[in-house]
Amino acid sequence: MKIYIDQSGKVEDTSLDTVVAYSNGDVVAIVIKASEKRKIQQFFRLAGKPKMFVYRTFAALLFFLLEGKFRKPGKFIIDREYWGKENTIKDQLLRIIRANYHSNFDPEKISFGLVGKTRDCHKQAVLVLRKKVKADKIVKSEDILKLVL
Image (tube, rainbow, N blue to C red; front, side):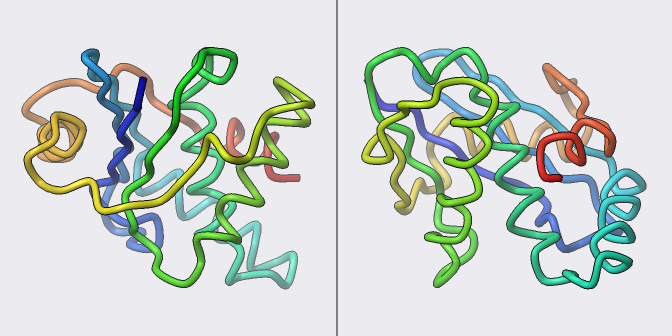
């Protein structure tokens, strides 16, 4: 089974919410509010690692989105939002998965590709961002910071 993942509202755009959604027959979307992203960004600035804000936050959002799916067979295909930084994101996501969920998680289950605008995950992410439908979960800054510290 393949799970496709898309994002609407980039993490680094702290004036917009960020929505991350998956589809695999089911469609699930989570959101983090812009104000919460600014709190996380400030933490990374104070820590002297402002560039890691985007990648660690995105990896943590992926973890929250996919929680409960890691032990199931299949692949996770993440839309190519951050070209050239996919290894960084994958490393961060693997670190979070292994520390919090499954120490022997297979890294080959995670890949990046072009998900496209016709997939249900893309459509759901856009609908949640535009506030046409509600997210399945709202993520707070403290949730993210617990995972990335």
